[in-house]
Length: 459
Image 1 (cartoon, rainbow, N blue to C red):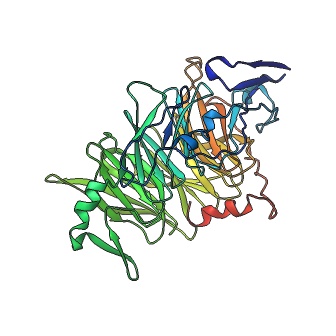
Image 2: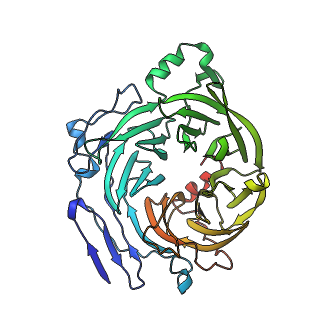
Image 3: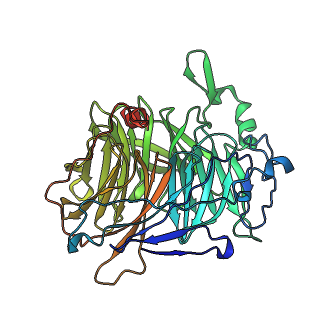
């Protein structure tokens, strides 16, 4: 076995190349005690991003600075034997595990890829930034685990368990330094809105809140097709619409009878929401004068089990919905959003979905990832990726720019409650699997057994 490693420029990533040609990389550190808003990899500079009243995030003092994860050096590399099913055959060699990024600091709840950067969020409240499989930067909110991450040009939006949205920007002087520039709703808008009694809505008996504020965890963030609006869905049964240019909340829609687990935006102002109440709903955006309003259009699905994930293909012609029963339903826009069928590949809840080219990827509480290829309206299972030891919570896909023109390949990132992010290479030309091999269900004694049930209601 050959082994390559480098420490140049703070590089903390190691590659181990097996005889089968796969690379396995693992980063591991002891549990960290982070306490800052944002930090810098190279020089550990700290600065206050905004008023503590505007979100409750505080800068670090000098004592806390020493607890920064970037001030700790003992990263260790471990050999581990991941595998992909099916394990052999020339046609399946394109779908391989490239490596893993592991920090023993919390379960991975969110990730997104942008250019050559990968952003990951966990229940440690850290957002870490990776570049070329190397930890590049990071920033942190002091409250609320990171449930969702989206990027709009130079702004990074993070949705949190505490119901707040935080907005970050990269420093103009140092591209590894991130500063928090706002928390939504902003303090200014919050105070202005609180002056009118009519702006309060009753959410529970004897409890009222301002309509511009989520009073439960944010489950998903999404951008409008033109990039001017930010959508946030929440366990408080609503989704809210924010204007990115001034951070104002334009509208709050009570969308479901239970937690809204997922939200995606499509073409022509369509918005799709999936809920723990078992429904997938379609909303249409209309401009009334200078006011943006969303109106209910139709219900695509109504079932007993919770809807846990939604996705659109790149052309926005197919809508996919994952459920707590392990099924993936889909609808076809060219047939007036009629139901197209069901993809059956998992034994436990589908927790996340992603699409790329003709591929559809589903991650599940059964710890597996299923890669499907769509041809017309037909879907076949290409691979079951088996390497995680906990529920697969989030997915992101990017083009593999090193792939040959005749075989477009993709880099797939998967985040899990096993505290790892895995990096795969997948191809649309892989031979299909006749029957998706069932993922082995976790035993009742597994530490993840309780986590696997999160898809049954709130995701």
